[in-house]
Image (cartoon, rainbow, N blue to C red; front, side, top):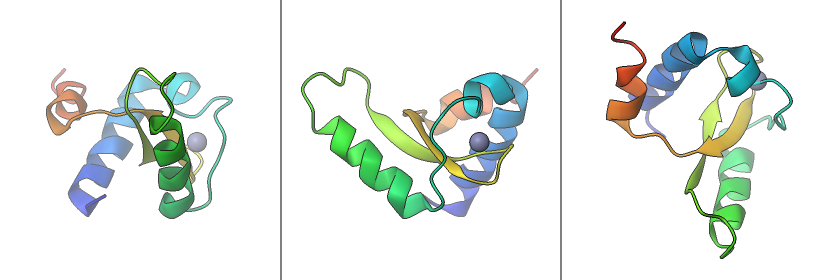
Length: 79
Ligand SMILES: [Zn+2]
């Protein structure tokens, strides 16, 4: 994930809030670990939404959640 998108994730995360972005989610120490888990989930037929690893604005770790496009992330920063 490029730095630009990482920054957007952090900024959008602060707007979305800790409960949804961090909360009880599994904390991965590295982008690679979160990405590997997301890929594993995405290969399952039961996974409906494409998942991705993202940097957490609150705990400095990485979590796995529904993939968000740049425009989706940016939409949180417009208010
Ligand atoms: Zn977190």
